View 1 (tube, rainbow, N blue to C red):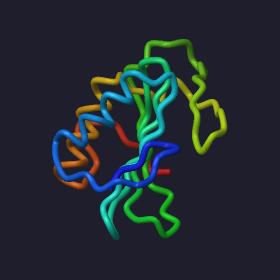
View 2: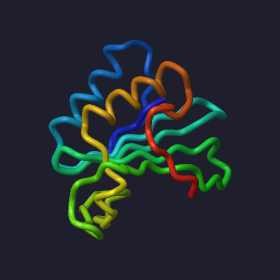
View 3: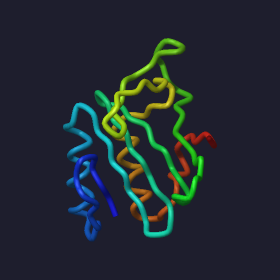
View 4: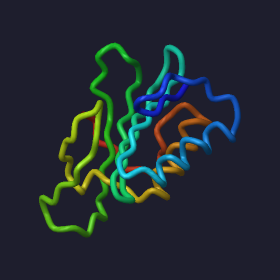
Amino acid sequence: MASWKGEPERLLSSDGDVKVYLHKLRTAEFGELWLSYPGGPILSVLTSGGRGWLMFLRHDDGDSGFSTRNPECAGPEGAMRSFMMNGQQDQYPEAFTLSLEQLILAIEHFCTYAERAPWVCWHED
């Protein structure tokens, strides 16, 4: 299942369905995408200005989950980036963010295997 903020949940049944959401991530100023498996893991994707970060939840029953970190972040220490989540603009550390290309690979991995991408640096929240 997937939902783009402001749209109803939709069952993904093909690679074409996934590509619709990936296109939205590439073109939206701010993106918020939630992917989930019934009774299983959830992947939240937030994008802003060509970068984004992921949150992975094992289940929807109060799991604090994992969020991405970028040990190769070249920005100034303490730099923040604006994202929209649930209609509210929030600031998150630039060091959480990955390139859109990295995000898309991690999303495709999640859609295929229902797990966190093993090559991404994750922090247990």
